[in-house]
Length: 461
Image (cartoon, rainbow, N blue to C red; front, side, top):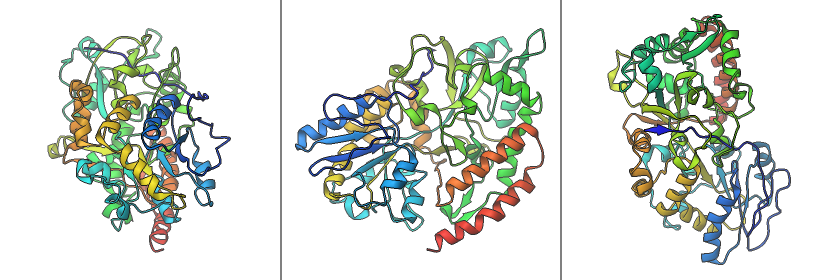
C-alpha cells in the first residue's frame, strides 16, 4: 500500500466563525455562563471549535475555545481566581507538577456524577492520569504510541526481505548498517536508522532493556540504573559509524527540526504532530521528510503518520511497513513494549463551575465524540467503543497502534513533580553522549545525585 507522510501546520492562528478563538498572547477573560476551554495545541482551531459548539448547541451553554496556549500562560492563570473551566494538554507530563501546586481538581468524586464510564477507557492511558496515591487527576483524550516504520523499497535495494522488519534490537543494528550508504564524494546519502530521530525515544529503549527512569510509579528516581546505561550505549553505537557533524549536516539537509523549540517531555522532544496535532501544510519540510524522501530507511513514529486525511498530496509516495519496535534477543518476552502518553483533560482547581466542566468532560470522553476527535487530530482513541469505529478498524496500520496500546507490555509514561528538570538533564546527556561518545555512567550518577533529593522533597509534601 502506498502511503504519504503527514505534513503539519506550524504556527497558524486564525479567527473563527461561531464562538471565537483567541491566540495565546491575548486570552479571553472568563465570562459568566460561558465555558472556557484552553488547548495547548490546535492548528486547526475551526475543527476544535466546531466540535465543541455541538455541545454548546445541545446544552445552550456557549463554549469558548482558546488554542495554542503556552505552558507559561497556564502557570500564570491556573493559580488565579479565574482560570479556564477545562484544559486539554498535549500530554500529561505537567499534571503531577500542577497537582503538587494544588492547581488540579481531583476527579474521583466527579466521575460518577458525570456518568463517565472508566471501564470503557483503556487502562494504561488512564493510569498515566493517576497520582502516586491513586487519585485521578485527569482523563485521557487520546493516545500517542510509537512503532517502527521501514521503507520497503530501500530494504529490497539492500537485499533485505521487504516484508520482514528487524526481529530483535540486534537485528536493527545490523539492518541499519546495510541500509547506510555514501555518495561518490563520501558524503552520507542514506542512513539506516537514527535512534534519536525524529526525536528522542530513550524512554522506550529503557523499557525494552527492562527498566524505567523511575520505579514504583514515580516514587524513586532510577536514572543511573543499568537499563538506562544500556539504552544509551545501544543508541550510541549507531553514531559510532560516522562523524557526528556529518550526521547533523545530513539531517539538516532535509529538516530544521533537530534545532526546533518543540517542548521536551519525559526525556524526549515532542513531535510536530504532538504539538500541532492537525492541519496539513503544503510545501513544508518536517522531521518525517527524511523518511518519506528515502534518506532514512527506518524510523520510530506514531499513529499520525497513517491517517489518510492528514497527508499532503505533495508528499512522496512510499511503500512502508509498520511493526512494534523489537526487543533484545535475550528477552523475547518484552516484544510489544510500548510507552503510552497522549492528550489529557484537566479541570483546574479554581474553575468557576465544576459541575458544568464535568458534564463537558463526560461529553468529550464519550465514545462517539472521542472517535471523531481522535480521527480528526491523528491520535488513537482511548475508548474501547471508539476504537470500533470503522475509520480505525478498516485501516490495518491503525490496528498496529491500537494493539500496542492494549498490549500487556504497554506501560504509561511516568511523570512526577521533577519531570521537567529531568527532561532538561536527559536532553543534555543525550546531546553529549549520543553524538560525542563516552561512558554514560558518571553523568547519570551526577544527575541522579542532584535531582533525586528534589523528588523526595516534592513527594514528602
